[in-house]
Image (tube, rainbow, N blue to C red):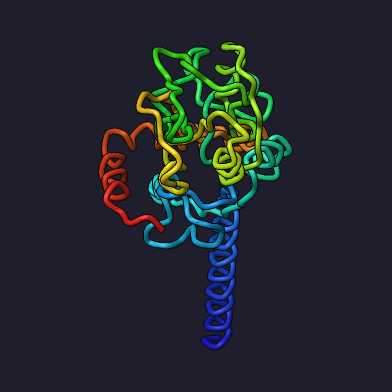
Length: 267
């Protein structure tokens, strides 16, 4: 009798533990892994080269997103690709998020930005970036009050897909789109373009005695975490929490992280 009761009790415990383990395991598996696309070339201080996303100082953009994902207990899978490819991967639902994208209405077909009452919500930006024009140091070209002065006849180089193209088109400036900043600065050194317009951080990476940065910025742009339509539809509440996390960075954490990279030695 006692043996029978013991066996029944033992079976119950084994069953309970099995169910508990199975349930916990299922819970862990059900947590989404956020596949996040970042440009595949390193750019100090924004991001390191592929494979270095988990370093102590992985780059400003990556570290800011790590703060958000850690607060939400999310696991991140990093995907590295050229920016136009990141957009296509997002549109196809092959990645969940791009870190990070400036707003263009034409890009809404690729995925979702944080909107509030039908307008892009700048308070939910990940960060701001500044874009400058770089020219040959002997040239007299200037950028003043939203336009070029004494610009040469050669085109202005930008990276493929850069939103500054819209501004240059409105100014009727001939634009040459190139796959990366390295190519653009190489063309500038050979005097095959009149200027390069790019993120100010590229100016540090490709600094050269024959190149100067024009003082007045061409654009100050807000950058957002862009989320795929597929992920938003399946995980709407989580997507909104990610954007809220981006918003809260500017209250609690952003300045400290930015200061860290302002003091960092270029890699």
